[in-house]
Length: 152
Image 1 (cartoon, helix red, strand yellow):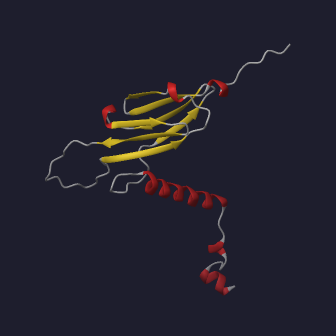
Image 2 (image 1 turned 180 degrees about the vertical axis):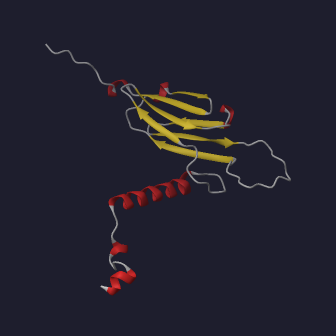
Image 3 (image 1 turned 30 degrees about the horizontal axis):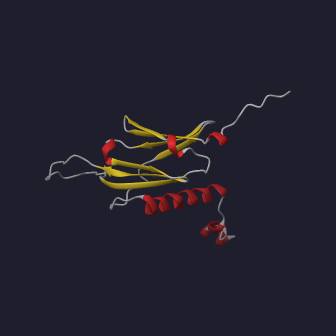
């Protein structure tokens, strides 16, 4: 009893909850994303650019946050099973004699690759950049779209 009171439960440090394991998995995923996809030399806090991927009955939509990136600094390619977004984020020159208290804005090259399903129409992909967000619409192939079947 004295041991437990002074040092706590000896088996406690080996007991983990599912939430702890999920958090550890998320952290490892972020680490692997950073080292696997981030192309800037400074190793930031997350994967750049941040993306969302959604789907409706007609298309997949990939949205990427690209504040300050111009369309002519982007290269977007799509193949039968992958979307690749590469580019360069430039930050205007700041005073050379500035002493930073915090510096989080990064410049440099980046690249992200997103796996796509087989049911896409690569000939009709559309992309637009507005307000720092790139939206790529990837239509589903006609054979993959749901069809209404008349019941007789």
